[in-house]
Length: 406
Ligand code: ATP
Ligand code: MG
Image (cartoon, rainbow, N blue to C red; front, side, top):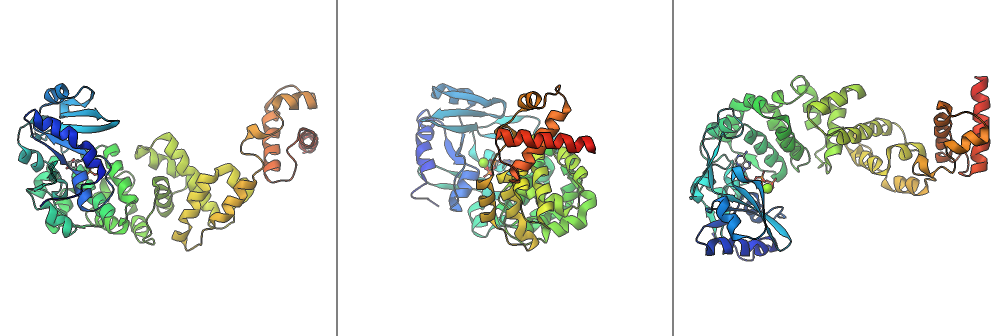
């Protein structure tokens, strides 16, 4: 099979392949980019596999970076673009169901394609547009089937992460899982406990935001893969509830986690430990917490200036995006309106500061300053007072009087 009119990403990378070939080696486009071109999808990274060893690749190009030389990968910088050029390799001895103990560089493309996870990912494309399909990958793509290369049991035994990769491809591509491959996942799901959470999370998040989330979640549950993911073992019923939500695609990862936490019926205090055990960054955890708070609020109430100000427009928009899952109609215009009309966007925008308060109220510095500033902040956001120094100071006096009385 030959492809005419390769997308620009390939024609830009062609000189890299040609240069390697001129030096007497083989080189092909491989992996996800070949699959994606056959699926007419946008190409992310164009990866190249070659019979040249890393040192040989480095000699051919003036600008390279060693990104994973022990795995055979050299990053080649070419015309403002960068390409991962990886030596054909086999991954021989897997002792712990994860990464290979060591990789062996080989000169044969076939050996390299054999070690890849699924037939659709084991295709190579020559610079002239010829597809090298040794494992019926093109046919499987046409039939929308995810099938392990070779013996599925062996492949998952070698690297258990492949099971999660398979499920995320179901979601991303809306493909079916080949029945033999699926049986092998059922049989080996427990090996996921050997895989680092970080690696599982990458695949899980792609599954969450894929177009066929429901189909992939059904397999995630049916194969018991969920039992080997943090906090999920006891959550089968709620994960089913999550699976049965309307099938609308979720676009952003934070939104997906928020919806998931909601369906798992977690209290606010339980969210952080779950997200931490999934090894999310502190930044992501904070974002998800805010989104979750916003969602709980929005289920029963309309947005106010104060809520939009506190959570920020992006979070509020995310919450609104999730409303259809609760049979509520989103109103993005209202959020636009509120956020455009916000008088201030942070405490810094207040026309008074701690120093002014101290002077104006003739008091020693103390906690009272931040109490008053936050009180004034809320009043200004709610448009109960104007944001000018005189009015703010007057209100501060008033605040001190009431709190004294109280
Ligand atoms: P994406 O479009 O999400 O990047 P991808 O298939 O390109 O999908 P990568 O993780 O970029 O996924 O991997 C590139 C290629 O390397 C795959 O297409 C596959 O051939 C091979 N590969 C990746 N991970 C594994 C694995 N765990 N086992 C075997 N082969 C793998
Ligand atoms: Mg890729």
